[in-house]
Amino acid sequence: MARAKTLFFYLVLVACALASVFPFAFALFTSFKAPSEAFSFGAWPAALTFENYHEVLRTTPLFLRWVLNSLAVAVVTVALLLLLSLMGGFSLARIAFPGRKTLFLILLASMMIPNQVLWIPNYTTLSRLGWVNTYWGLVPGLVATLSTGTFLVAQFLRALPIEIEEAATLDGLSRYGMFWRLIVPLTGPVAATVTITSFMASWNAFAWPLIVLNSPELFTLPVGLNFFKGLYVTRWTLIMAGSMFNTLPVLVVFALFQRHFIKGVATTGLKE
Image (cartoon, rainbow, N blue to C red):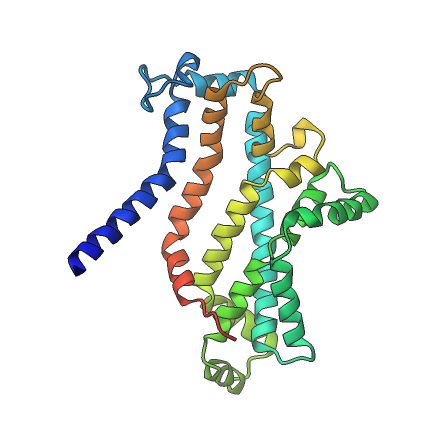
């Protein structure tokens, strides 16, 4: 009976894995198909071709610029978000100040608010600052909608023994020195988790860049891919080829940080 349960459990896991991989595999195979095969029943292309990738780069002069725009926005967003998450999480977890618990509850409540609710007030603020259709308007909007990092860092630091900080204080470290020389090196696993999740969210963001940006030169890659969607005809093979350029950086970042990501998820505490 136990063996049957184990076998059923593994079958469910395999089914879930296949269901997760199927959309990516379908997009990858379609990117190597001729346009006439885009809606063919078989997943594997009848004739393997790289023409779609060549067509994307040849017919879209701004494509590489969109890639660079996405990369620059994602790197700046991740750097800002990581710094703010570490500082905010350290403050909430290790510094006793009036209203700390209330602030933590407000942080939790903000995570439950859909991002769509924040679009209008964020856009109004950026419009008054004159940051619409600029990179300056794009990055703060993405950082403001990603508050999960502060929560993860705070929960991770709460699981660390307080004796570490007491020993650092006896050695003469200030609060500032304790943050940079003790806390930051210890937060490697959760920092990797924040880096991966924030990079994926920033790199794949579509709605907020579409709202803020008007000039094609400033578009990020997910917004630029929308150009392949015509009014009467949509060239799905080109969209799938362009999507592979959008997927590759995420896979590289995940491959680089996956070991720390798994460790961070496993060690992040969930109690205050």
